Image (tube, rainbow, N blue to C red):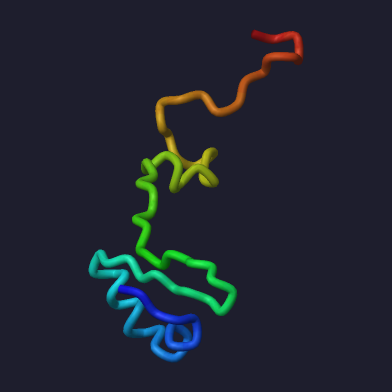
Length: 73
């Protein structure tokens, strides 16, 4: 799907819906530049990454902190 910048801004909801369904929307500006508007799937994160800020509360089986550098191993 190809559109102009003005038409893209006027009908953003329609173009967002087209991008969500898997289509690429090519947006042309007045100087001849072309921009691609498409949906990008987010990266999958592991549960340990999602709750990493709770490191002291959640037992993951991995050591988070060590005493290395303080004369203890």
